[in-house]
Image 1 (tube, helix red, strand yellow):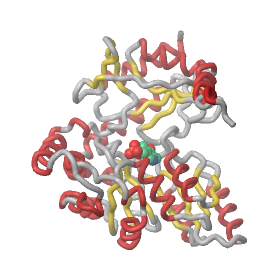
Image 2 (cartoon, helix red, strand yellow):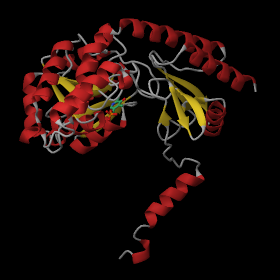
Image 3 (cartoon, protein in one colour):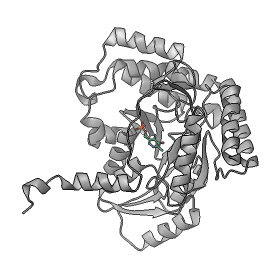
Length: 391
Ligand SMILES: *Cc1c(COP(=O)(O)O)cnc(C)c1O
């Protein structure tokens, strides 16, 4: 039997181990300087290169206005889960508008991207299914796959040949269904998948296709509507609202039939309180704005190109980034941490990403660019990286 004093020793030990490896994480409270790219941490002002508020919509006046409006009209809470009395008219209107803007049959709103991935995948697969996910998929998709109890295999990152090998192998087995899971833009590398080719492959092997568009919606693709937009052969198209939409939540784009199935069988949809009116208001306004923000996106894309080119000219490895997410791959953990501290001392805040989030020797500084970064901010960023290189 476990001794009384030992019951919680696993916690101490795990934390101590993390500490010894210099991998112990902690939270840092910041104060955003409203509507700018800057935050203050204590007395220090930093340019924020870690935010996913790519279009700056979290502080857009029309978004705030509509959020306040819904707050006043409907109250601060939805009062119940969607199937009880939590589906307000505004939830249905948002879903209808999402379907119309994204030109999909139906949309179902979830409380977060993490929750959606975890619960949808585990609802649509079971112990007799096979899930094949890209090696660099977001943790939420992995949790969903594990929770489903399906046979779970990973294919090499963006390697369609490897995926096809696994699909061929699966023909010998008696799975009730096969899901292929990938993302359009990968969170840690900022590179892209080939949605069209993935969809074709799924079609050829009669597999279902789950494509997570979290980082692309709002920023990339036609009218900023992501890379799933306009593509056929996607069974679940996931979009997140915590990034370019500037607010919170997520949606699954799917057929009307899958939507009805999820409403009836998906625990992470059924057993949770519906998103509050203020969030729905913000999303409603953001959805009106996003297709119209071509000028902002154009400027952002110019900045992305400029930053990527300049970093490469300075001799940095930015991997295969093809988006607003740019990794600066340093290699060792120590060097990465030192670089991150150097940046911070110089007023630039970028996240240091280390194992287990990325592979060993692939530690990196990861920056995200948003429309709130001024030309001065960007010059500052490049200047600090140049100084780091020349130190
Ligand atoms: C951010 C992200 C999520 C999680 O979305 P949240 O709304 O933040 O929970 C899921 N998948 C991918 C690919 C993401 O980048």
